[in-house]
Length: 355
View (tube, one colour):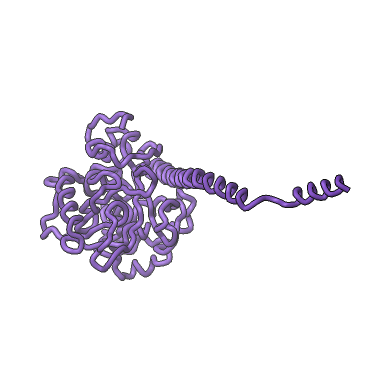
């Protein structure tokens, strides 16, 4: 009888299961592991998104090289000038402000979308906003079309619509060919009129072709309260008709505007919202400010102003594609002189790989 009671007791203890203390211990261990693994998983996902961004950027750069090989020059940034040096258009164009990205579509597997653009229509203007013209309405379907390779998956604001995450490099200031009184103009890979690779004496491997730029986002109140200068804001300013002609001057102008948002400058929410129009508001950037600058970008009109490379990748890095097609991340802490040297194709600066 005693042995039977012992067997029954042993069977009861075996069926008892785990205690509450044991459950809490297991949960505690799991929470500790989750606390250790989730940040690491987040970093892995962020790295994957940055690499996907870099892959898109490289595809864009390689398409540009293929365009150059086929057409003998870089894609035009504006057909208003292009028509004067390339015959075949219907008379001298007035305002054909189509981005270089639009011209790359056949080299990106988007031939039908390219064929749907009517480049011969004037008055597709973005000065100072998208005007309601015949050309605007005629190209409305294309204007609203999304191209996957143009979008960085790390930027949630670019998640829908015809956004553009990758901008062409204008150099130190704007795209216009260097002229008297504007010594910082026309030194980028994208210029009016378009350049050839032979016009890059500094070397394609150390001259930026494209860089990332986050898409604009409406923040704060009607006068820009709560704007994030690190990532989103671009301010339209007034300089009293005296447009600064040097990059350093624009640094000062943007610093003043950044310190008095709603007074000196007012927000522009359309930055990068469309890939079809050209200008620094949509498809181009320059090296006035360093990547992810702490002050707001600012401009007066079209390509005059500071249009910075910006991203939301961890560590403050921005992916940059160079003229030879390679892509590498550039830190926000890069020296301004080095950043500007990378932005110019003909400055004669000595740039090594150590930056």
